[in-house]
Image (cartoon, rainbow, N blue to C red; front, side, top):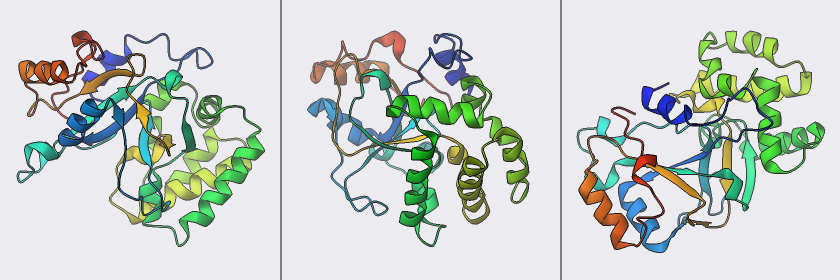
Length: 254
């Protein structure tokens, strides 16, 4: 895990106290989109998602897990990836959660909709409460603690067929094991995806209002970041009190 994220996590309570701690959500977008979101004071999505055939806003729970566009020489400044950190406790319009990257899964499964229906059945079997509780319940089933989850404990799994063996040691419930190991294994075997397959994906079907209590910070790649310019941007859209300077995270590499 990048050192910059560890510094951010150091400000959180003990991660092992899963029932008392909730990690933030991380929404990835382009720098141009960030400017638009700030001007509107909300995160919105105009494009139709080809997986769900509707407008969807995606976020990952507890980790950003994206690759910055500054790794690609031809990327324009506006296309640089940034990451908005959101307080899940104030995101009351969560639509769905999945224990994997649905976009990565859609390129490998014959019928992603059929699989998502199977996952819906699994959620019912778990007999969980609200969606935030459901996220923590899933993590407790698959990891020893939130700390293991954030650090990507599943990164130690052998490639391809070895995944299921390691997963089975952590997941006692046979139904949970079957569903989660299937999708993780398929994504790993058939795509060039990264370790997002191990993180909980949170979906919104309505806009996320960027109120002061919702937005916790912004991750800006060093290659893009200009402190004065960014402060001027926040001031222009009257957002300087929404993102405190000491809440900004400056990763040297993403």
